[in-house]
Length: 235
View: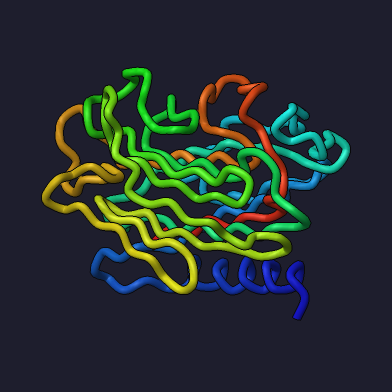
């Protein structure tokens, strides 16, 4: 089965699960969102209460990603509102060719823009961040000011490959084979509390072929290409 057919099958199968009859007790419905990141590609996110595509635009070529042409690549950033019946969201990213620049940026702050830290858009503790820059994966702790701990750094082999992330409260699972990071006591990873405290939220932002911030525009220095398709699924 080729990759295009695999993602189509995964999309169809998860649709069937998402709209199957649910038991009386509250349970997480695995609503999904699918992105085709070719220049003319589209987005399929059937549940607007969960998924919002904040931006979609062609990739900007920079000195960091000289082979990322607007004719071939699209960049998006999406907001995921995780219901309290669910524990988190998985993000599957499929690559085509050699990745350049920023291809993935996952955070719990709308001002995440790579390399950790935050611009103060959320309370302290809500700015953990993951990025893939070229073939390098980095995960940073939540911190409102330096120093920021780098919790994980891995050299990946992503050319024509794929990678999966599972983002939950104070927990991140990366890839296959799996690497699990968890900080339940220190609370310096993703902040997705349940129940939600006053002023809190259960929001994750996903940047694909770009960093998250600014969500109302485009960071022309931190773009990239290589991520061709992505599938987001609630857990």
